[in-house]
Image (cartoon, rainbow, N blue to C red; front, side, top):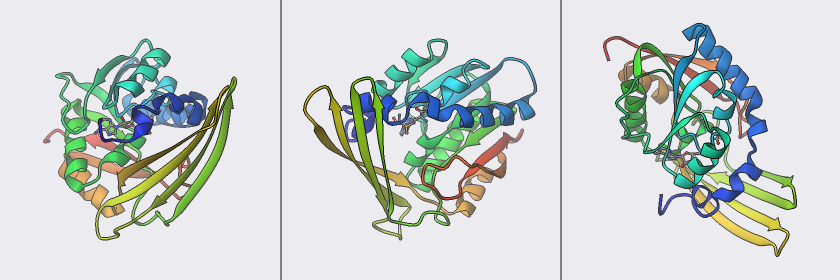
Length: 248
Ligand SMILES: C[S@@+](CC[C@H](N)C(=O)[O-])C[C@H]1O[C@@H](n2cnc3c(N)ncnc32)[C@H](O)[C@@H]1O
């Protein structure tokens, strides 16, 4: 990802401090129970696209035979350390084809990086191509046109060992006529030395809820939208639980 977010490249070392695996325990429990309710007992096969540091996957990897895909080798390195039983692949969720099928496909917050309807269509086609009929696709974007109220501003300080990270996150919608929003992070980082200050810009997608419904249906899924109380951005968010139809 040469021109992509620094957080997934030269600043990827900040990820475990910024968003540690323990923060994902409740989400992991919710997703585990949604999957169990639909797939039944037994050890099922799970593919996560855009797994990042594998912090969420860590809470599912004990119950599923898991495979992880991400665009960033630096992020996959975190997940490889944290989730040694998981199979990892470098790949783009829009184009990767592993030649295998799974009982479930998960795209967590990495789906935010789909910036156009064509991107979303391509990611949904990847999910469908890796699912058996009746398999379950879970997708969890952070924002929708209906819920995003710019500017969104957040800040937090995290400490671990001798390291301290404060970050400020500022999200806005420079052009409401397109399907993109922009988030700027400022990182203040100290690890037993001088304070480092780094800036990173992320461009992500923003779509109406109706666009999600339409694109999921066109991609061969029966989609349900459930309340999901784990929003990064404080606004209401949703878990899409989608069943792969026979005819796709
Ligand atoms: C916020 S991080 C995910 C963190 C993850 N939920 C965790 O538990 O650690 C977003 C990830 O999406 C990945 N990503 C962005 N675009 C992608 C794409 N087109 N295909 C695959 N991964 C992508 C980035 O490389 C990054 O690792």
